[in-house]
Length: 331
Image (cartoon, rainbow, N blue to C red; front, side):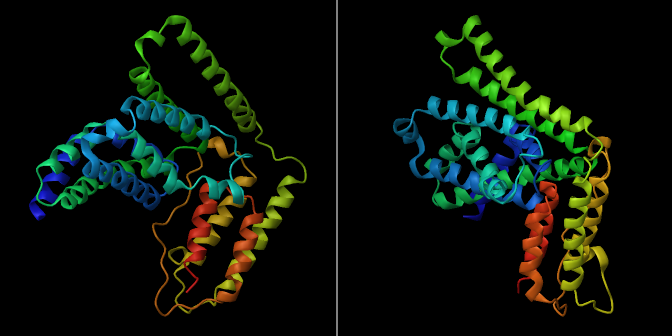
């Protein structure tokens, strides 16, 4: 059993080194946290390889593989366009819930790996295995390990690359994958020059409709009169609520405590609201601030902080970090 897990994990890990899976994981890590991407990879791989282990070669008789690959190509194109939306469109409550990072990553890996060599490897290994579930565990473990390497690289790059550049890089990778898969799945009779010109022209028009507002937003380095004052007011109210949430232990751990970490992020957001976000400001980050066992907070104020958080119009990445750390205090 352990041999089958190790064998499957080793084969998948080696097969995926330098493959599109690692590039995809690295791209997602530029936008989402390490935990979110790893969870999405594990979920998507489990569903994909579970399907391979359970029904194996019968997959093609249920849904044509070409149709699935065509769908995954459109999905990658959709991700590329979605990445370019302006920050004005980026999530407030409803949008954030709808675009769950874990589900986005899981869906991308599930569809992206259908019919790929990793799924075919899982089918081949499961057909001769004494413990099919061990093959499933091994293949998922292999995918998580090979993705972890890329995720760590991507998360480090994400701390050093301006938000505007991250959008362009991520979008280019997703659209590149989409066009590559599309070229492989579209029947030859449709791959004509007129059709290609028509499709690429339509895609270019969509890209321009997204890029023009994005570049216009980047040029507007000066905050509109009254806007900064309103934003600053929300951020200062949020910072005050966080301060009241903390009961100020004697040995304060500052940014290594969830409350101190969130307050530091709020102060950074206040700074960025008054300056051009596109100038390469390196975003502050502490890895996994934690709550000590003997640490106490005024938990009655947690809901107030979360309510103020929804009104603060934070950068999506900062919003996720603050919300995740405040929710740690619900004990």
